Amino acid sequence: MIPPGPDPAHGGEFVFNRRMHEPGPQTVIGTSYPDTGIEQGRAVLNDLARHPATAAHVAEKFVRHFVADRPPLPLVERLAARFRETDGDLKEMARALVAAPEVWAEPRAKLKRPAEWIVAALRATGVPMPDTGRVARGLTLLGQPIWRPAAPAGFSDDSAAWLDGLAQRLEVANEFAARLGDKVDPSAVTEIALGPLAGAETRQAISRAESRPQALTLLLMAPEFQRR
Image (tube, rainbow, N blue to C red; front, side, top):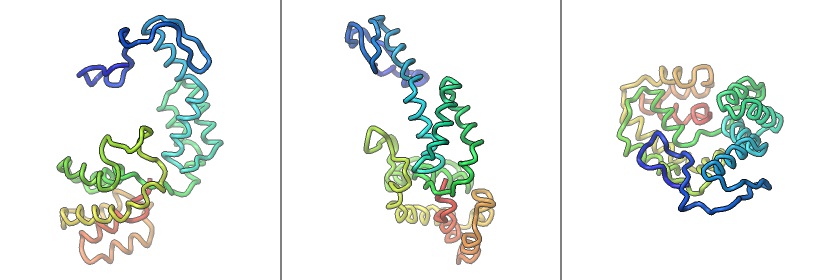
């Protein structure tokens, strides 16, 4: 593998460089692959993509991201089966996930990661794309600096990893709401962002706020808005 060069259309693709390639047959997960150049690498990747462990891993990540930190095993197994049936079609896995009764039976417990939360706030309020530097600084403050996870596995998808940053989210929400001032109607934003998901306590807190910026801050920090 080597960097694919300046063409972003081919970013992340498998590339063969014979000068960097270890010659001879290679054994991966008990299977020996003859030295056929680039085809050797493609054969390895194809077999890895179709390995049962890959289906299980991708299915578990799907369920952990959208449903629960502790993915229900029956749902994981059904999604893994769908992965195998469709030759790894992620769109079909998403369809199966949406149709699964467990998804809707589970309480909404997943906390949005900082980037999701910030994007949700921008979309709900209809604010044009702000200064990207400001967004980047906000993400760094919240513990999710752009392209800089602390570990090779990427940013955690467990809610517990982001709970300590809720105080910083309040700081960001206050600043965001103060900049908007009276430009948006928090009640209208509540309907756009949450609709029927907004509970009576959240609606009451927003309606009793002393100002629109305060109401907007309360909305952005509401449990319903914090969760996926």
